[in-house]
Length: 209
Ligand SMILES: N[C@@H](CCC(=O)N[C@@H](CS)C(=O)NCC(=O)O)C(=O)O
Image 1 (cartoon, rainbow, N blue to C red):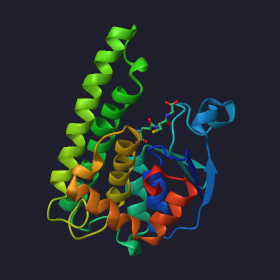
Image 2: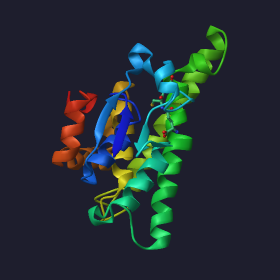
Image 3: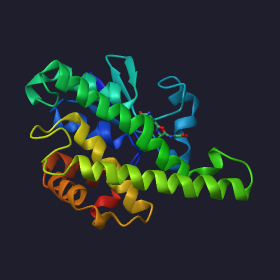
Image 4: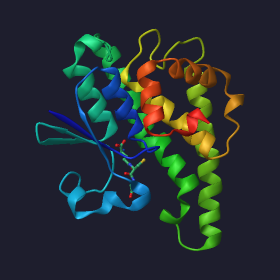
């Protein structure tokens, strides 16, 4: 039995799209960050770090989008959400690791600068640098998508839902996302997928506005 712990609009949308696309039967368990539910004692039993997403697999917990998505890709091979060639699979995991380790933290510095520095001047500096860094990462994603249907090429993979998360965050952050032609075309292709649309509607995503 699979249970996905997620918060609408958070990076957990990557795992939410992944679990829908792999066709698995699962239970949804919202953990509302806006209400601080990720810090509850109940959720500490699931992820003591107080972060979403988490996936319970018969009571065993997997955290981190990259690990959850790699697990889902392997567990449901019929959905073909991970490349079968070992190097291509590693490249898909590397792309997700970059999303997690570089792209996501740049957005945090832009939108949550108070977590990185004390005092208004220092926070403004972190925010400014974070915005530049996040925008540069979005431009890099746009370049990676040039001439491709999906982030890994012709094959739709678990990395695509993760890639979509940052387009929504760019909109939320007031960045000129329409300037990123390849990324915008990718976003539009994603919106044509019924399972992606189901997740976006469920999470009342900014991508639908
Ligand atoms: N690298 C982690 C990041 C997890 C993460 O930072 N999640 C955020 C939501 S986007 C969270 O739970 N934040 C709650 C908090 O910091 O209190 C992953 O990809 O799963």
